[in-house]
Structure formats: C-alpha cells, structure tokens
Image 1 (tube, rainbow, N blue to C red):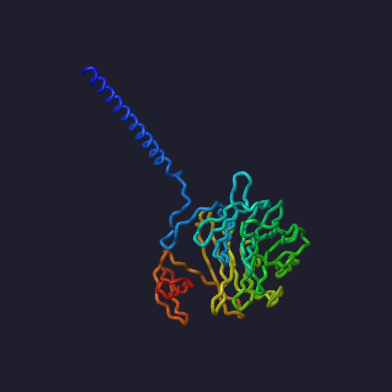
Image 2: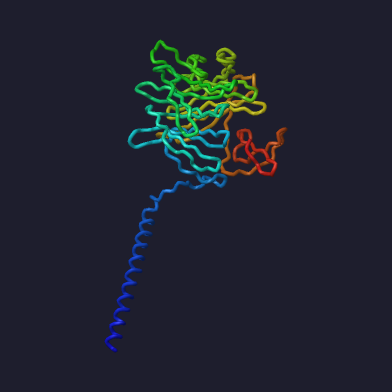
Length: 373
C-alpha cells in the first residue's frame, strides 16, 4: 500500500513538474517576443500614418516616390480616385506606378504601369468629358527629355506611349488641360535639339491623331493655362532675365493665337542662386484673376531656409504691370473664424498675419459648418 501511494505521488510530482516546465517555456517565449518587439519597435511598419492634424484623417501608405516628384491625382465621375507617381525601385530606377481607390477609400489597383521608358518625371493626370483617363509625363533619354502621353483603362492598362514633343526637343515643363472646346490639350516649354531650332512655349491639341505643335511664345518658359467658366483660356508664362530673375507675362488664348500679341507683363521677381521657384499658376473667382508663385530658399552657408508666396490680381480683360503682394497663411491647423462683411457672405480666417497679407476665406454652409472658398 505504502509503495503504491509513493509511486502515485511520484507520478503526480512528475506531471506537475512537466506542466511547470511547459508554462515556463511559454512565458519565456512570450517574454522574448515582447522584448524583440520593444527593442525593434522602430521597425514595426504600419500602412497608416499618424494624423497630420485634427482636421485630417490618417494617411494610407500606397508607395514611395522622390521628394521632388509630384503625385498626379484625379477623381472620376464614379468617385474613384486615380493616382500616378514615379515609384522608386532598387533595381530598375523609377517606374510609373498607378493606384485606383473607390469612394470608400478601398484600394482596387496598386501596381506598376509597365511603361518601359527611362527616367519618368512629373506625371499629370486628366479626365476628359467622356471620362477617359489621360496620363502625361516627361521621360529622359540620353541628353534630351520628351513629353509623352497614354490613356489608362478602368483595369489600369495603358495604351502605347505617344511622343508629343518634337524628336530631340528638351522639354522643361508642361501642363495638360481641357480646352474650351472640351479637347485634351497641352502646353510646354522646350529647347530644340539644334541651335538653329526654335525654343519657347508650344501648344498641341490631341485629336484622333495629334496635330503638329504650334509655337505660341518664342523664348517663353514655364507656361500655365486656366479655362474659366466663361470658356476664356488664360495663359501665363515666364521670360528669363539673367540667371536669377524672371518676368511674368499674361495673355488670352484664342485657339493658338495669343491676345494681345506678345502678352502683357504683370510683374517680375528675383531669387537667390541657392533658391528654387514654383509656378506661376492662375486662379479665378467671381471678379478677379490671380497669378500666384512661390520662392523657396534652400539655405547654405549663412543663408537660412525659408519660403515665400506672392500674387498679383486683376479684373478679366484688364491686366497691367503691378507690384506683387505676399500671401500669409495661418500658422495653426484649425484657425478660428472671424466675421467678414461682403456680398458673398464670406468669413475670413483668423491669423497672426495682417489682414491685407492674408488671402484665405471661408463661407458658412447650410448646417452651420464653415468651409473654404
């Protein structure tokens, strides 16, 4: 009897010890796993960003591109969001990448377009009146950079690339837009392959077959077009004034004719050798046109980094030479709103900047909320 009881106790002790060892092993593994997570927490990747401010949602990670490369974006009639960017890859350089999201923000397509042209840059998207999606971009080959275009279907498949600029022409900047007639059109500034060729701002309208580019502005650079609600086509561009100064000109486009001939000078600006400029672009409201540009000092030596934005405004049909004004933006993400009397029932945002330097307005919606105009 005593021997049997002793053997039973020994068996229970063995089982108990075995259970302790199993539990200890699990605890040890969990501890190691938690420790690894804590030590390598900076390597834990999420497809969601932090909220940049209280009035923004968290961002969804779709891909990566160079810091100076824009992301093209358009929204179709079905509320689907289309994006194209130059995806950075380790083995083959940058490639054109396309993503499509539905109205709920769900990713439907997120893949390379498979366009085998080298060094893509500055993609732009445009949806025309028939809901066709157009993509244009610059591609550098050897010592020249050309302007190309494709269309993309609903499944993310592109057509064959079409060269729009002249063979051997070096295109610096471009814009794709819908003309007053609803056609897909392009303006760009380019340098010819040979010294006896013509440099300047060119325009091309995309028909069933593309037309020959038309020279609009000899020696002009950095064009931008706005077609307003009255179907008037406004054009701004720059002329170089030395290496670090630019003059801004404005005209109306009537087909491929510039009115007035040669345009109207609006203003000019200087920038340091270590600075870059952006624009100009055109905006419009009920009464005025606005030409906006910015200068960014990249710093170096004793020069601090800084950025400044400027504008000139005028009534349609009355452009003139004028002094530019600065644009002040509120420093906070959700500024307070102050009453502002005006015929459109506008509300002007509170800001630490003087009111005459501040050009951000808001209007009350029907539910009492405030939205930017």
